Amino acid sequence: LPDFARGQADLMLDPELFEPADVAAELDA
Image (cartoon, rainbow, N blue to C red):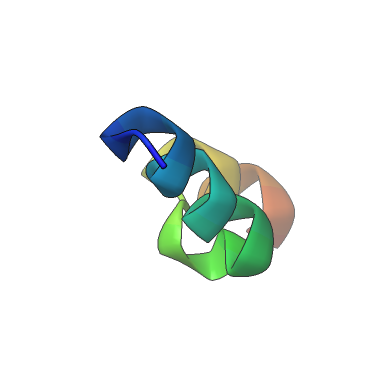
């Protein structure tokens, strides 16, 4: 897989790897 596709697959398999502070703050709110 190309690096981009591999990165997207990693995010889908483990969404916790992609957790911006803004999203985390909204989830905690």
